[in-house]
Length: 177
Image (tube, rainbow, N blue to C red; front, side, top):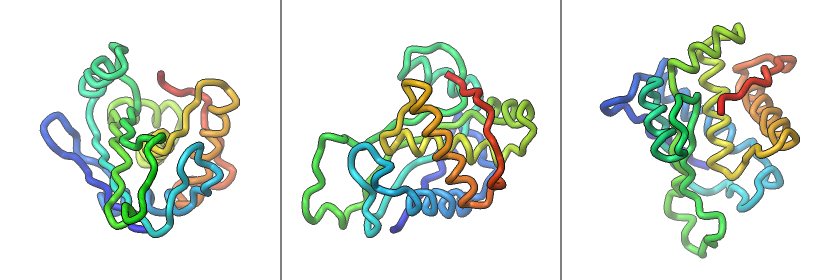
């Protein structure tokens, strides 16, 4: 499986405190780890080439996006914009083309506040939020407590896999809207 992460550092963006190569390594490991039965719709194919973009911004930047796309006029921690059409079939031969999963946008300001509130590093918080965004790109959602708990456990599993957190780490149940 090949993964390309495009780190957007255009106007309005903030530089990532984590190296681009590290993001690519973590996301590739997470995608490889996800079992097809974990996914609601189409399973990941191990021989595909996947792409996604990752952008870090500030609270005003993510508030603007949250208002524009979700009609919620406040800052949040992470937004995901999935490009996969779950109803669209993959045709033979499509595997040769990279599959663009979508975009993940993270507010560095909110991530920094949440890291301080929860007593862990900014890197841990960013990995937590990006893994959350990645799961959304793959079709995960959390409309109820049961699905939220399953999604949070999957995120914890991915971060343990990448040795970002210890196996006994327990996330706070606080999730920004």
